[in-house]
Image (cartoon, rainbow, N blue to C red; front, side, top):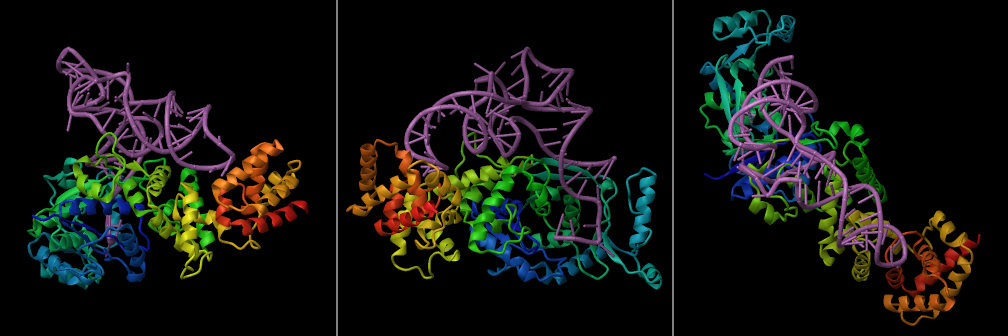
Length: 522
RNA sequence: GGCCCCUUCGUCUAGCGGUCUAGGACUCCGGCCUUUCACGCCGGCAACACGGGUUCGAGUCCCGUAGGGGUCACCA
């Protein structure tokens, strides 16, 4: 039997990081065994614009490289892959359930049920529907209809015995049928509900393993009932622990951003992203642009593999030490039996650590390519780039070393891309390094003359030049180097100063130093 | 509240009866390197929720307790 798994997002307008983890495990499980991964859109309850709300989700999957064998945009033999287009299939299932007596029309109004619930509560008993408005024959249907009531269709669930689930993550889980309710499977308006739809779809799409979040665990008995009564073979189930909030065990939710921002690490990541976004000129809504949503990472230049690697280890491990997994590694080693049972908190810092490490391993050429679109979006490099851009950028990336953690960090070094006249000097740094220190301006001016005479403008030659100057003047290197940095970059921090000078070149350095000197003097 | 699930350093985790004075990773704290900032290197702090069993022996098995979480819709 071929393994087929699925991820079934509802079109909400964004891809949640917890959803990605679930999708990743599904993808790995299927692809690791030569099976298929299916994407299906659960839009049984959507009035909104599905395609607009689906776009960010599809985009996220593509960006992360979680390719699907069947689903939106790629089609497949078990379509359509939108629940909203499968209504007649659900209707057929409802009819079958009705015909076999495993479901019934129910004419209870919401008030009726509410009254029963209240009654049960005051009596201190668990609620079980009385089935007072159950109609299993035409006469009863006619009678209730005459009262002006509208029916829903409910499952006629067993009221004794138990359901036994063999879960691939949890092991055996037992449920008492008497605790289950007669769930609605079809609304008054004829539309069907998730539980019915998901069973019908999973069966018709030949899903062999239903791997989903733990929140579905207690829903499973009713679905098992539907499988059984429809004569469908039961798939394997695996209920994953959910991804929890940073610093707590609550399920991670997109709606509690405010709360997460009180978490230092979360707030820090968000802020880092925000500063990149603003330099990119992005109009960011908090709702979408935050570390719970995948778009955030894409927009500031995270590496998809770093995110996947982090998520892989959130609830799964190979052994006592393996941390780094390439895609091939993941596909080779992933297994459900090493999935943990407890919820795992989302830790922004650890995600960042994976990103840092992954970024360090990106080859030079690839890193240049990674960073270029960010410079273009920020308006610092033309589209298409002039031909001198590539070698220039390459020099910068080399000089940057490990300083660029996410692609968008290149914008911290905009000083290499603005004209000498547009360079903005950080006032505080100018104060600290030029205006305040005794003789700093004179020293810089003096050294400027040496730079003007320099014949070789390479890092090594420049280092030699500066060191001999320092020796000659009997000063400490720090007395000149910081002044020099702020003069040519406008900033207090940056790459090694000799690389910086060499990249900018003699002419630009001199112009910038002159500007800095003028600024320091006024 | 009923039902279900979960419980090892702050966080992610290893551990499937003795090798555990509990290992790794991230964070944090020292120190080194150093022209800044990163990087790198060295070192350190830090956990088996509690109580009963079972056993020669329990982080590891069983039962309770406590705590945490999920779910109880004409949502998905």
